[in-house]
Amino acid sequence: MRYDLVIFDNDGVLVDSEPISNRVLAEYLTELGHPTTIEDSYRDFMGCAAHTVHDVIGERYGATLPDGFDELFHARVFAAFEAELTPVRGADALLAGLRERGVAYCVASSAHHTWIRTAHRLTGLDRHFTDELVFSAQDVGVGKPAPDLFLHAAAAMGVAPERCLVLEDSRNGVLAARAAGMDVHGYAALTDPAKLTAAGVTGLFTDLAAVPALLAN
Image 1: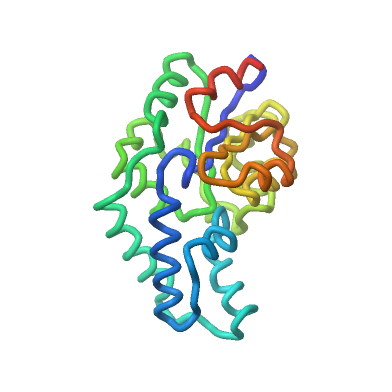
Image 2: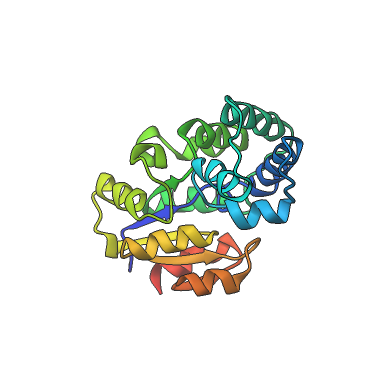
């Protein structure tokens, strides 16, 4: 095999959370007096660490989000997740197949550990991930597009960066993977493939069923 480790982004690649979380975020920011559409949220916040929302609102509106913003946002998202969240089509079968073949994998997400584990529990993907296979920007103190998270995940898994394949659906994720010296294939089911290409993807795909072939090519 060409790669020794597959590193998954979580939101939008394994769990179909992006439409839900970006809708909730846009609604909440608009409620606070910072008009935001779901398209704005996709553009500004998708694939970013939580502090990015505070940074953008500060730069754009000269405003500070209220105390407890992150906690209330997460509570609203988790409530929506309980009612709506599903795995990305093909995610469960792909992870099961990798395990059966003995292919090492992990998840590396800019989201908090609680967010990742809640999403996995609600979609049933938690059966594929022990705690040792879940990495968060919390672990390194900086989110994508910095390469730190991917480098941390690879080191913890004992794999050299050049032997890793990252699966990402955001521009920041692609930039982070490339900065880490890793190949990265862009999942273009929701994201404009031109944005992923411009960020430097080494390949594109629109169906998780295509991933096993990517490992050998």
